[in-house]
Length: 250
Image (cartoon, rainbow, N blue to C red; front, side):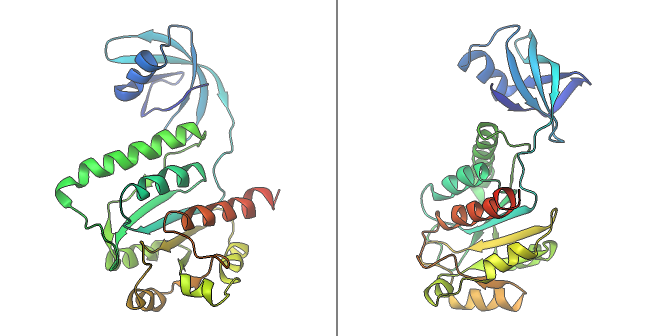
């Protein structure tokens, strides 16, 4: 059943769907009156709904049955990625959303080949947010992850004060055989707590960046014996977190 995140309700028992989602329902899915969809409100409450009205601007869907879904990770994971080349960040956002990330923070690292262009920022962030929304719908998430406006390392460190735990995935730790910090951090975490994980761009984080992060209460961790690409490492971490909190603890 097709799933849509809806910004507003028409009433307590009906949803208003407009813009791109209306177009998707009518033009792409070719739905008609009486067809059923799943609507999720901004609070994460989902319901099976029946299309009751179609206009030139909106689709009205009436609630048939509220559903109790538990598809969110019990902890809040933020992925901070050093701006990578090409469409790698889009891949991280799409797959990271499917794997349960709560938030994404792109940041400009010393070795980032891509330089952030503020003139194109609104369009770029809108695209990333759309990718997250579509991935959240496809994977039956209860919320759409937020894409934070790209920032520099100094701003990232300031923002990091809002998290319970802070890690840096650093390839030198993997090369040296470090395997305990990531696992130990997850074992300490309780439901509802937050974790910020920093990943470098292609070429990794510069030594001075690592030193600054360490000085600001970030712990360095390895992610196993293999060196992972910048677009692979966040997905590895999220998969491990899902196993720890959603499979191992059942």
